[in-house]
Length: 127
Image (cartoon, rainbow, N blue to C red; front, side, top):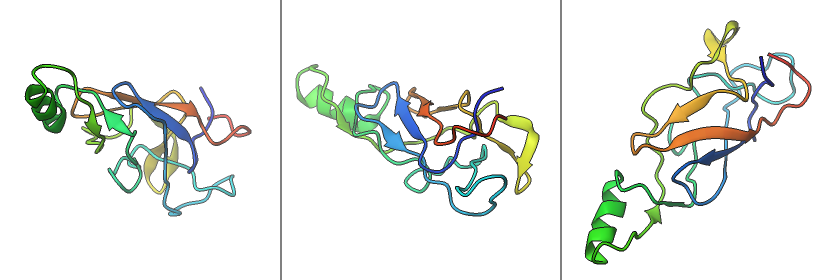
């Protein structure tokens, strides 16, 4: 099923230029010293921090900067805009009433980026 995801897990975005770290607020600690993540840990600038620069033309700031540069792609600072909760989640494991995250879950940004884990932050608990 995959490894659990805790605060400190490393993520990448397909349109981002740098990795980011998942922040999980300590609402429930189950089987771990670190807070376990749920599908609802998707709040921009709280749970999901920027991925450096964004290169998605669906991002209005990137589109404007690219237009001003005569069509030369001009990345701009990333401000994540998750378009919903993480999917699919681990429906059999609830944390604070929400399905847990494992390292196979993905999150879509409204600008077309796919956010996924490169390191779950948890190496011992299988979900």
